[in-house]
Amino acid sequence: MKWRSLLPYCIVFIVTLTLTLSCTNPAVYIQTKNEADTATSPIAGAVSIGYSAWPGWLPWKITQEQNIFATKNVPVELKWFDGYLESISTLTAGQINANSQTLGDTVNSVSGGAEQVIVLVNDNSTGNDKVIVAKEINSVADLKGKKVAAEEGTVDHFLLLQGLKRAGLSPEDIQFVPLETGQAAAAFVGEQVDAVAVFAPFTTQALKRQGSKELFSSKEFPGAISDHLVFSRQFIEENPAKVQEIVNSWFATLDYMKANPGKAYEIMAQRAGVSVDEYKDYADGTQIFSIEENLKAFQPGNDMTSLIFAANKMADFLVETGLTAQKPDTSQLFDDRFVKAYAETKT
Image (tube, rainbow, N blue to C red; front, side, top):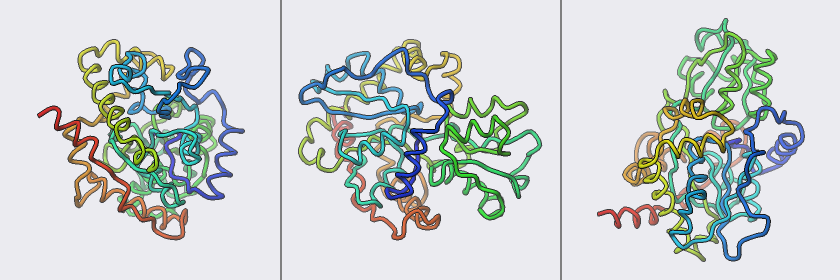
């Protein structure tokens, strides 16, 4: 997920982005001082791919460091973004060819008129998105009347609302405090709010508050938060062969991770600015999708494990929360031909 948000591609998005870039406490962001992901000058003909601070996207750093893109004969500029919102706006503006972003964000971008297509499932959040609470809160019911921070319209906001609904509470039962994800974590640590909904690694930051604890997480809502490689429709139409090699590179990276787990953890932990042991704590909270899981996710279904079903629910969420006036059309959002083509090479 950073952040991994669902803010609408409209005035609300622009205002929030401005606040994010100008006001966020840099102490809550992932460390980036020890490495750069792009060359100082553009690579001719390179595919530009954005990614940011989410465990399911950090394998891209392995792809780059182990020269896996080169083995697939596709030049790539991998662009790291300290702020996830910036990566979304950069893709929407056409300044990069692809981005690592959530299903919800992509649905949101489509609602604003963007032509974006999901070609790959990187992962599902299975615990790395959490609602973290102060020590005196022991149940969802205890959130009633409390100040709860989250980035409005994000998948963590979505997770919060799902937890409230399951417990028989409504959004009106809490004092919702809309803050950018990093600011939300900082506000919770500073005891300005009673609870916060955030994603890893901001979960680690939030849990620094004395006595704080996880109330519930994405683990309890399978398929609710999925993360993807998203291209502009124009780029796919003009460069299908390059898109295929990027998808192939991802699965080659997963093979490398299985064969070299120690080195893989080292690379990802360094990119995240945490120790290897700290990074390993995130492992169970992110389910990296295999090719078989990718194929299944693209199929129609009746629950959130189906991307088609989940996209429809996310579209409803945008309308229900007032973040878009009209339900976006998600019928052209998915293109599974690239994962299918990769799968055929393994049969």
